[in-house]
Structure formats: C-alpha cells, structure tokens
Length: 284
Image (cartoon, rainbow, N blue to C red):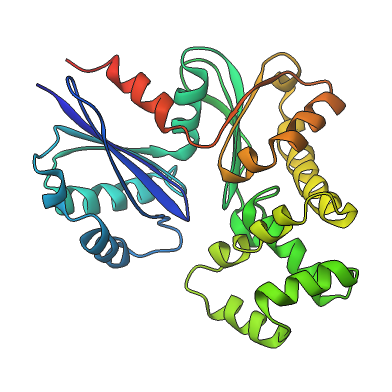
C-alpha cells in the first residue's frame, strides 16, 4: 500500500499531511521553510525539534514537498538532501509553492494562480504545468501584496507620522512607541519577512478606517499591477488565489477583479485540501 508525505510550505508555516490509500489523512505543522533564508543545518534542526521522523510511525514511500524558494534546481537539491536524511525516504520530489497552488486550485484547467502569504508569487498554469511566471524578487525587492509588503507599508506610515491619532495610538498599544527598538528588532530578526508580516493582524483589526483600507487596497493593487496584469491570459482565464493574506482580504481582491474586469475563480486559505485530492488520484 502506497503512502505519501505531502508538505506545503511558506516562509512562516509548513503544513504536512501523511496520506495513505485507505484511512484518514494525518496532519502535522511546523515552522515555515525557505532555503533562500535558512541553511540546511537550520532546517534540519527545526525538523528534529518540531517534526521528528518517529512521529510518522511508518516511513512513507514518497515525499512531495512544495515550498517557497523551491523553484531553483540548487534549492530543490538542498531540500531533497535534508528531507531524505531526516525522514529516511529515498523518493523525495521538491517543487515550488506555485506548483502546489496550481495543482490544487486548477487541477487540469488553465488559470492564473497567485499566492499571497508572507511572500507573494504568480504564474499562468496551462492545465499541465507552469507556462509563464513573473520573477519573484523576494521580500527585499518584491513580494508586492504580501504580508511582509503590507507590514513594510504599515511601519512606514507609523514611522513617517502618516497615521492619524487613532491608528498611531492603536499601533503603539500593540508594538510600543520606541521606533528605534522596532527597527532594531527588524534588522536583528532571523526572519525579517516574518517580522514585517506580523504587523498585518493590526491593520486587519482596523478595517473600516479609511487609512487602513487604503494601505490594504494599495498594496494589493501593486500586486495586480506588477504581476497579474502582466499576463495576457488574465483576460481569458480565471484568477485563483491562496494564502493567508489573500484569504483575509478576499473582499478587496474581489473588488479589484471587478475593477479590472477579470474573472475570479476562487480564493482559499491553504492549497492542502486540493493537493490531497490531486495526489489521491495517483495512489496505487
């Protein structure tokens, strides 16, 4: 009987699912993994602490790992080596988080696929593979519409004195008044993209305030402008979204799709459910 271990990883969290031909899926969670930010030793240490191999009880036949920062061949090889050694599984397949989103949301249909979580990414999926993809510049130079991108805008609004009294007070109650301490934490944080994204729940709690709405809409519109509107297929195929930011601000995404006269497919928080269905079809 075949069994698969499926991993769907972003920069903040990783969802794991042990899938067998019969029986219910078994789920696990760990911190996120990104080989552009973490070295192999750090990934291995995190797995040993949060997801030791013995937690599976049985060794799966194949690991299907989908993750942020996993599209380049050298990063795929790095992750394969870590996962093989940790879980004792020879057959480890590593692909990008965009592939996971496309397989989950589109199946065998064509579509524009977007991830909006701690980071952001997009592609045109032709029903079989990713055919066109905008380059992902990461949290320093890109990631429009993502959690860290929105968090950066929130921090700028506070630091530059753009917030009105209500938002300024709300920010200080949650994060303190010492801007130098906040900047110090940002630049000393092991994962600055996660730290920036941690500001997003604050702006979500302030929904309804015109300035909060402007930040959210402007950041998501930047993603549409620099990513989605670059695909000529955006006007002929549905747009699919996944990720915590996409799901949290799905009303804004729907509004932008209407504004640009684009067809919205669906918005899901996580692609895992669709991945389970996709891989069940391939089980012997």
